[in-house]
Each structure stands twice: as C-alpha cells, then as structure tokens.
Image 1 (spheres, rainbow over the protein chains, first blue to last red):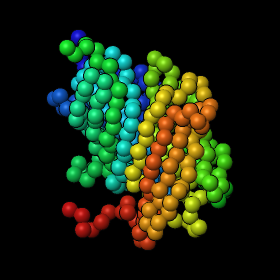
Image 2 (cartoon, one colour):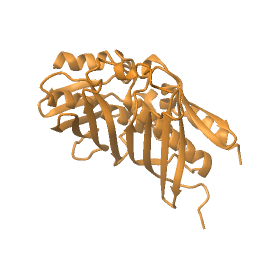
Image 3 (spheres, rainbow over the protein chains, first blue to last red):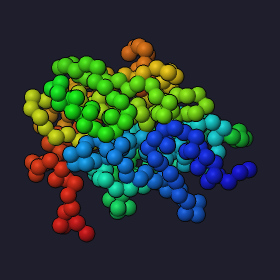
Length: 141
Length: 152
C-alpha cells in the first residue's frame, strides 16, 4: 500500500478546487494539519479585510475529507451529507490552519469535527461538525 | 440596495473569483448564481463542483438576504451555517442559491436558503443560518479585528 500522506497530497493536487483555494497539508507524526495560506482571492470583505466565511467552511470540509482518506482509506471521495459551521472570530489576513478529528466511522457514515485557527491555537476562528458518506477500501467484516 | 449588493459582489475578491452574480433581489430575498467552472471541480472523477463552492454561494446569498430584511444598513457577521447536501450538482450546470431572511431580532437575523441547478423543487443543498447584526458592536467597522490590549 502506498504512503497515506502521499495519497492525500496526490488527492489535493488532483482536485481543481483545492488548487483554487491554495490548500496544502503537513504531517507531524500521524497528525495532519491542513494549511490555507492567505491570498487576496479568498477575501470576502475587503474593508476589514476578512476571509470569506464560505471559504473557511469549504477549507474545513476539505480538511475532513482529507482526514478520512488519510486514516480510513477510501475507495472514492466521501460524500458530504451535512455540515454545521460555527464562526467564532473573523478570519484575518493570516495563514489559517485546521485539524480534523474523526469521532465515529460506521459502515456508511463518518462523523468528523474540525477546528480552524490562525496565530493562536487556543483561539479558534471557526469549527465544523459534519457527516460524510464513506466507502471504505476494504469492507469491514 | 441594488448598488450595495453589486458592491458586495464586485467588491469581494472571493465573489469575483467565483464569478458570483445576484440574479434577483427584493423583499422576499436574494437569488445568486455561480457559473460552472472547471477550476471549481471538487471530484475530478465526476467533474462535479466542490461542495465548498456551494457553501460559499449559500453563505453569500444568506448575507445578502439579511440586508433585504433590514431597514437600515448594519454590519453583519455569520454566526452559524448549517448545510444539508441532498445530491451532487449536475456537471456543466450553473448553480443558484435562493435565500430568504424570515426573522430579524435586535441582535440576530435568521435565514433559510436552498441551492439548485435546474429546478428549485429538486435542490442540491439546503441551508439554515444565523447572522449577528451590528457585528462591530458600535465600535466602528472592523473593530473586532483589531488587537485588544487585554489579550494575553
């Protein structure tokens, strides 16, 4: 089996929208951090300026998908069933990080929580909880 | 209002990058469109637009619907956004979002929205959102972004 980190990196490289956002991942041991560098094109409100709330939601959604691929291995990309996004602080013009925690994976559904932060890990800017339709590579017996 | 919304689209770099466009806007709410674009594909095997694009479209449409529900301009900020994805959007089709602000209180506005490609009766996604009104808390636009002295 190929290196899961490479699989995730290859997946992001193949997804045009991930390239559009400019999203990458970094591994520290088995812990994945998704990285969204700041860029003009992700600004929602230019007066502040603040990152578009939709972009933060999208970034956390992609982080959850990448985490599922990394730890569960998926025959194909999981489908998003629903997400609930909480906005805690405005996204300032800084690099944004996100980490996902898989709370439960069943035969069909995965529940994933994601948290995004910028300069202070203890001061998250947004959180996402979501359900995803999964298709494991090896059927669980 | 129309001019303001045009600013909200043309003045927002992310809205420009997605080519978001307000199709209609009145007291009943806002309808926005994101054109199909290959650079927004989320699943390269099928060519379906990324769910994140629908998220941004719905957030933007909900924000504009809040302004239609207000009698004067107020700064707003998304508090939460819940989205159900019912089916993948059709490949090659533009996606629309129709948002309606159904309740405004002193501090919070509540919005519902759906995203669809051909038929509003067969939606791609549905959203429910809450927005804080006067998000800068009377301290002036963007005050919440400035460094606070009491921060550790």
